[in-house]
Length: 261
Image (spheres, rainbow, N blue to C red):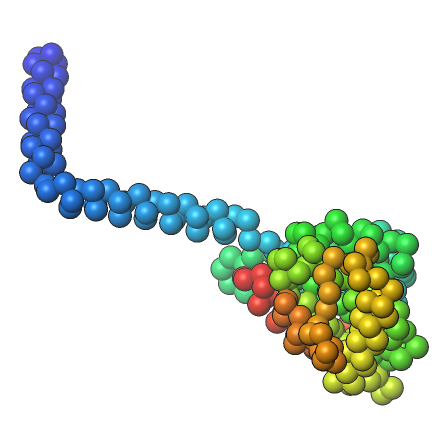
């Protein structure tokens, strides 16, 4: 009995195969090739989309001079607390987490890989380990102690903006003015203009020293024009924050613009 059912199934499958074969042969070759082409293109398209999503970075790099408040911002993003202040970091703070402000959201929220790179000059080479992975860079500036450090901050920012790993991938950068809750803090527009002026001076002096800058792989700005951030190939935006009070909404907005929830 089982053998009879198996034999009947074989006969039915053979009939279906013959009918399918006849159907394919009845289709004009141009239509058949077109249909095959559409199927192949669709499969290829979805494979590319999946590959892109898989490789999309979720890394945000916090950098800037020592004492600018990067580590406090790191803890505010992760824990919603400044941890009552921190000491100067000698190693990168690195963690993968859902932003503290999003922990109560319903549904799945994409975690962010945040790296706080030490600002000490001897430790800055560590930045090169993380830039190729970055979806965005946050350059933190102390809005209170800005003027005494404007030259050094400009040199560090200049080096970042001329790195091949940043320019080629057009990594967006947020110039984040921290500690704006203090009465003596400078405004973000003042800080932006001063940095542009200092970078313009740096660009002129470094070009005069060498037409082939060894340290920097790309030049900044437009020849013959004063430097401005909008001339950069990657998008540069400016925002304000206060790590000590937890007012970090503009920082979170930047993160979610480039690491979608």
